[in-house]
Image (tube, helix red, strand yellow):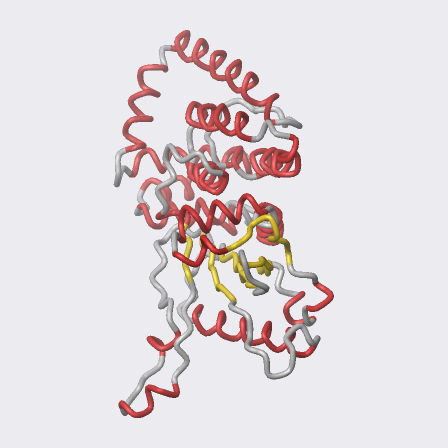
Length: 329
């Protein structure tokens, strides 16, 4: 799965008002969020965006009106799914928001001498390493004299770090996306789906239901270890009984082979924080599913690697065209 397609999934998800409302209400949790009329939220028209912003496939700009006023606010979403953390992300966001303001002025969406509308910069990060870059521009600027501080931009962005979010047992749609990103077990996937299907039953969620279906087919199944293939499905309702049948079949097979007890022990070990064996085994299964046989030299590297290195290789599987690319320096 290429990064551009991965970005496209997220743009589809967060083009839906309910997803953005859940994200802001449950994870931003700031007072101004209560003043937004989410029924008016929609992607900002590309007709008013310059070519430089249109080319940014991992960005999404949405507009939303405020309750009891004529003010329109904007949400600038940037999806950051790179393996390396951008130390200067605050500068990037400053530039993008500045360019966006220029477009509003250029297309006369802001009247002459009128105050500029508020823009909320939000970075959605899905990397393995916890985000450690500065979130405020001023913290990146060296100020040798106190009197210079007044001339330094002070814009900051809000960070939604999926790896650090605790979405367990949460029932909103944004949390379900986080839970699917983190799931690594077929049984856990079944439990998530049972809850998600109930929420997405409404006809209003038909578009999101299709997006979640595609996301599970193309993303989640590549991360959840399974020793036998799981058939692609076309609706979430098809998947739950299919997984139940698949898990039952695997359990019978493991019992016959005397492997169930060992597998359960391995699963418990894999859930223990800092366990290398569980992550090594998962990475080996993912590599075999994607590339087939693993050369002995790669197996040796996997079994002697640190947890950080294993996580980096696991992330590279999404983009790598060959097993050599996964292990490249």
